[in-house]
Image 1: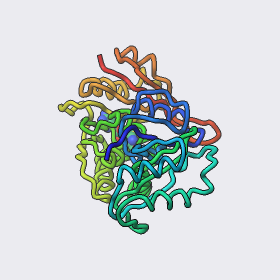
Image 2 (image 1 turned 180 degrees about the vertical axis):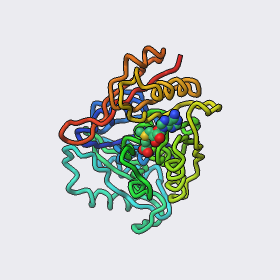
Image 3 (image 1 turned 180 degrees about the horizontal axis):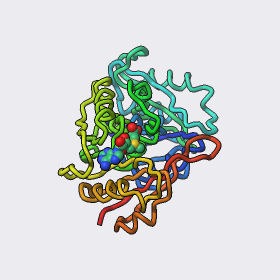
Image 4 (image 1 turned 120 degrees about the vertical axis):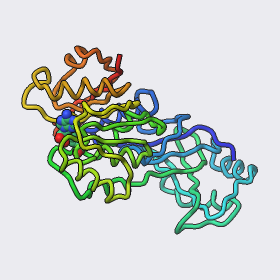
Length: 314
Ligand SMILES: C[S@@+](CC[C@H](N)C(=O)[O-])C[C@H]1O[C@@H](n2cnc3c(N)ncnc32)[C@H](O)[C@@H]1O
């Protein structure tokens, strides 16, 4: 079955707009303009808090009749398949009749349809004057169960933010080796394992480190958590995700925060930092090149929770 590019759709609450935009830049390397986009890169929607589904295009046609003819002519066949309409969340004159369109396409696909546990989901949609048929991949929201991890604490980062940090650090390339050297109860580790990365954690507080291990075990996830100080790590990594501990002072006066940043530079080629204050000047002072940054929102009132800094070492 020959396939072409992908159609992705996404959505975000307005206070997470910047978060979604930096994730798209990190995964797809372009500036997000619309909530629907075409891309040649294959990314599973479940790794993102914002991506909803992905259609791997098999046919494009200007009329629905042409789409059914192409599907017939190319003898598309599968066992236990289902056809769904990919809702793009914009004015679509055909959306109301989506069930009839899905049924019509289903009738020209060879093989048996299955509505309970399909092995393959085909998708159709209409976008800007063209019809599309392809393989549909919808997001799984299983990761939301991570909210119910047995051990949490007040300074745990939010799940969406943790996912975005992973995507910024790994750029969707799961061959990269990641570290969260101040991992707390392991919120970022859970999202890293879920997305398929080789990721380890380090945490200075032994009780918190044990809680991170318990959280990972709760979901049957495997990731090493070292109890110790970042300064004792002697391996190297493609990227470090550092959710800085809250200091009572500004960064330049906080020895531990500075130590964490200097050690992150020592062990990693790229650093993704989350901070509660604007630390741009201090990062530049440490010879870090800031390649991207944003503010991650907290709620619809426009408050923000963290500054995110994407830095290259050297
Ligand atoms: C903001 S919290 C991280 C929270 C974490 N992202 C989570 O969601 O659970 C920062 C953590 O860094 C740890 N920490 C502080 N100094 C450290 C150091 N020098 N080496 C390793 N961990 C450190 C603290 O104990 C704290 O758990």
